[in-house]
Image 1 (tube, rainbow, N blue to C red):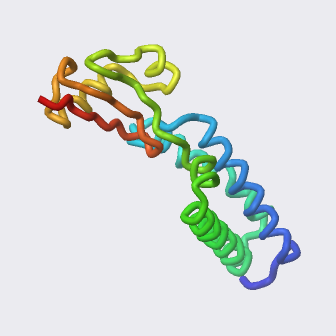
Image 2: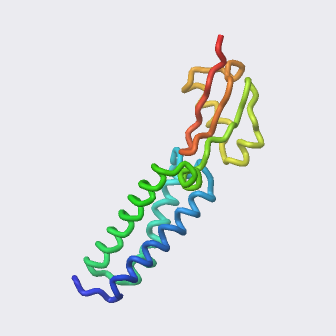
Image 3: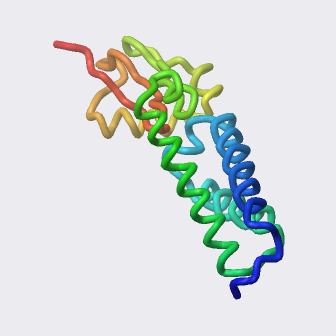
Length: 154
């Protein structure tokens, strides 16, 4: 149960590499991957975790190996949170920037397509903001995948 089949440092290296690669893949896939999950998005996350589990452990099934991997992932996550809270530049790289997807009652359809946002999702955001398209001043796809609507001033 406590005997490692790999050197302790290899668990740290494996967890760090997997964390960095998955973070890059999620950032490249766009804001909607991180925003509101559909059942398909959730399925991808579950399958990703299953797919990388052997890469994290290197086939080791010891309790200690799992604890080393978990501790490494939590430490990396805390380090990323610490750095992004103190650097706007790093925060922009890690979390992204808001993107303008509509202005003055006009929807930017090409931008929506590029960001994988359906017109139905945009319409839902309008309803949630209790705003009609003609009354919209600006609409943004936020870094977390949510859509923010700003109304025109009367």
